[in-house]
Image (cartoon, rainbow, N blue to C red; front, side, top):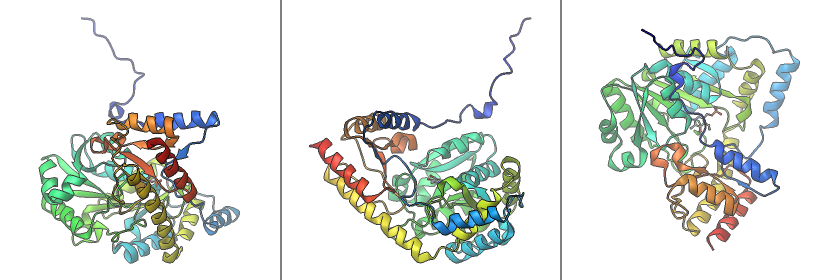
Length: 391
Ligand SMILES: Cc1ncc(COP(=O)(O)O)c(C=O)c1O
């Protein structure tokens, strides 16, 4: 019998379901328009409007000049881990030892490590939706299945009831992002308590993504791992990217107890063997930033939010003011029912670059994400362009 053998030149199957970026089409179009000399209002990004503060840059330069360019402990230099444990205790009310915190290459590596540490092939993971696009791929990359839980429905019908409705016997974890990208939704303490009660009852792990913890306009940020019994079953993931304007530095960290910390250590060791040593010194410096400065930055974002949200509502793109993060997520069906088409129309006709809501999951369809972490003048110009477009 003749059997056909599959070529060896093929990808490992676990990558079959992992997507790349659906946002590329829009980004390519933006670049092509710019190359033609056309103005484009950049509301498609997610980077702070300010540069990395000088003292953070100088800390990195100092570290380089002092030859802190050698291997460091792969989980992070001890003073950084101490400072992170202090920060988690003071700000997030999460009590961890220095061995229960690990420096990672951005929040992304923390999240990658978290999903890899928890999910087995065939497991299910509850994901509040719309969700930050890479999350689906992080779940499928662990050969697990994302179960999308509509955040709005959950809020309306009760978080716990809704989670129960979507959970399966194979459910092993909940991805819990607050403040949320793209919707700006901020879960309250009472909602965190419901998620925690559900996780405790079902013996689930929570992967908490607190990338935007310092960007909350209404109410405060609350860390789910601070609730009784939750530190043991939560992997809390953080980044330096948003709070300190450090997107390109790739600094992040995770807090977790055993057995998850051992898993995270292995994943960091065998993927990057740690965060570049001089970047860790910059991270250490960043942690000394006064809370007053972080709060002042948040006020700057609030001005941008208010300006943009008023402009969107004025032209009929209905949008409640987001409670956190730096994105507005209005309904855009007035432009086109299909959000990818709506984004293309807005880009071509009004030169406003946004992200189609469909890339954030089915619950994002009909919406566009406008990132407002840009200069105020740019938002003013965008609002003017919107007025012209709808005139
Ligand atoms: C919700 C959310 N989590 C995590 C991250 C990770 O950020 P980074 O890898 O830059 O630390 C981002 C970045 O946009 C995000 O939006």
